[in-house]
Length: 380
Image 1: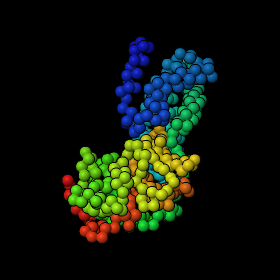
Image 2: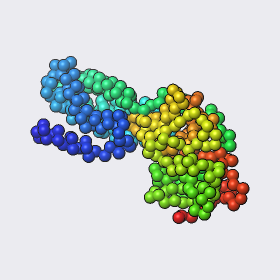
Image 3: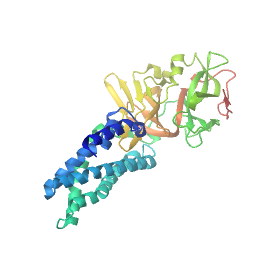
Image 4: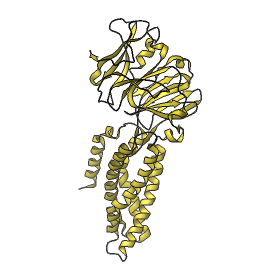
């Protein structure tokens, strides 16, 4: 195959590569990962081949010829395997950092094992080829791994662990009088819980299965436009009313209610609960792990992100609470309470599609549903 034909195939493959499978398109980390998988390995193979030939007096052409395919082989295997292991074992913010460092070590060992036969072929026909191949493999893999680790570290979003303190829930004081509704990951049903309490009350049997799209919203009541219904929005925008007349436009302004329709994607104005509307903090988020959520108060900025080549957690919803606290949903399973000024974060529930309100925002004088009782669904 000619050199020009090879370049064309690589170019077409790069265009057609489903970058969305990496969970993110458009960030420096994602483009660096794509470049590494398709073109960067050729550059690394050239560097390793040159280094091996120079230190051990081997044929440069042979070393480069073997180490370029070796890098492609190990990179693709490593990326797929480490991504699987991260998703399997990095189950929450408490295990994520520990699993990451274990995978960093595992990927280095995997590279040594997978690429050693190619290095051994470079020593074929030489005296003491076995010992030489081990030394050569350690040399070239260590040199390239240091460069790769440094580059990926600079491009990754790690502020969840470098700028925040991951603590247990009892180390963050929850705002008083705030009620949270969420879809539980365990059964897909809707629950109600008061922040600071460990008691969950089932509100509705939803049986949700689409963790990536299903969420809770405030919808204008079809009976009386002065009221809001608490509804579940499922895939294909199917709306299911859970609690009719949960609040009114007097208690929650339309501008705030409409913000509850933001889920995933880019969010530039989160729903503000109660006195949070008077806060000087302004929050936004992007559905990319390495970009995450950010908050600004004048010149002060706080960012929470965790996106690395092995995986990460995307922010799906941000709820601005009183006392400069935030509810942050990471991916489809982690609902976290964040103390923004003190830079603390804690996992409080396993669920998604979360909403929260001040108690006096949802107290209706008459005709309201008793939210301590299960409510059967009616699909519109």
